[in-house]
Amino acid sequence: MDELTLRQAEILAWIRARMAEDNLPPTRAELMRAFAFRSPNAAESHLRVLARKGYILLQGGTARGIRLCASAEEEIGLPLIGRVAAGQPMLAEEFREGALPVDPRLFSPGADYLLRVQGMSMRDAGVLDGDILAVRHEAALTLQDGQMVVARVNGEVTVKRWKRDGDQVWLLPENPEFLPISVDLQRDNLRIEGIVVGLLRIGGKL
Amino acid sequence: MDELTLRQAEILAWIRARMAEDNLPPTRAELMRAFAFRSPNAAESHLRVLARKGYILLQGGTARGIRLCASAEEEIGLPLIGRVAAGQPMLAEEFREGALPVDPRLFSPGADYLLRVQGMSMRDAGVLDGDILAVRHEAALTLQDGQMVVARVNGEVTVKRWKRDGDQVWLLPENPEFLPISVDLQRDNLRIEGIVVGLLRIGGKL
DNA sequence: ATAACGGCTATATTTTTATACAGTTTCGCT
DNA sequence: AGCGAAACTGTATAAAAATATAGCCGTTAT
Image (cartoon, rainbow over all chains, first blue to last red):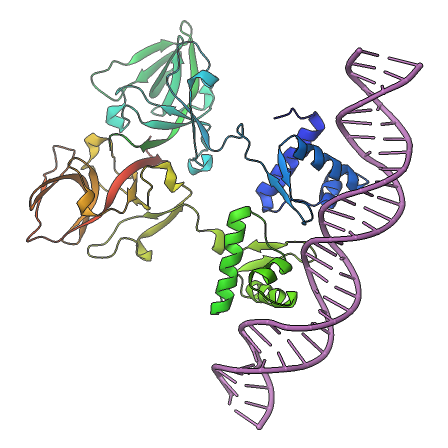
């Protein structure tokens, strides 16, 4: 698929937004008004370019005959992250298992990505190996004791319950076979990758 | 909402189908062709009626300015069933807590409805009180030992693991504090309301 | 019986829309 | 310096679409 110029991307974005909003493709005149063009032909030629580059499909001779192409890069749903190597950023392409068609607004607050759970350290909270967590990016500031968080301690990603007392943070498992992780905010490198806002279990061991 | 005549329902159904298919409301002429009217006014007057009765919204003066009304398009997602009274059918309106925007194909095999779990009898399988199960309608014939099922024994709905030996069926909890339920297919009234194909936990106790 | 309505035909007319043709300007490229 | 592409203006025009008016026919309700 050909690259878009800045302006073309702007226009495509607007078309997408409009169609998401009221589910009706725009006319040339509407595009013209939205971008304050003084000629419908400005809209027309932009549409032609977008069609030539494969981002939209124009049905000739029909009012509002614009259709968005199902572009491969267009992400439906939320990205599903698998095993994250130590020290690597969470959303790096190489850890993605794909994407699931889940509405982010299903959870409250909304979810930003999905993470597959490894291990049984949260078993007694009903989180089993292989489960998928819905996670929301959130700053450490807003955390409250007892919340389930995705944390990164010295590079290693883990899911635990949060408990803080000054500079002393405890990451508590929900399984007596595991030991709490003690983190000193002064000495250790702690990063909150998000708070858990939901859980999804599909296939496998139900 | 006013009742529709047979013909009006046909036309509304066609409009819905068309919009589901290519996401573009029809014009009067297209409706006319689809129903072999010989006048666009036949389409026009039908649209007026549908609008008056509240099934669609007509935007005056715009090509393809037809929008399905909220109640019509609101049937997205899966119905969420809450506490089911003994002996009552599962999907009766009075037990519905609403609907969640979940794609049925997210699960495999696809889900037919969602059921909110009551109690802790499946705790050790990672199913907690308040969790939502994705359930698929399935005949008892296709069940295999160990599958998690939604069963109805003598009117009472319960979620357990399935185990069958001839006419003897065991409905096994996953929590030592609960006792297995013994069912004799000859004597007891057993009905399989579905097999569990997924689990969803949102809000509350994460 | 007659008025009201659903379901249409037939014809016109006005708006909206799509789309062609002829330019202008700006900018990066070679 | 000259070229081509992007990003437009300005003006038309034909086709598509919405919409009005007038009426026909059969069923149902008063």
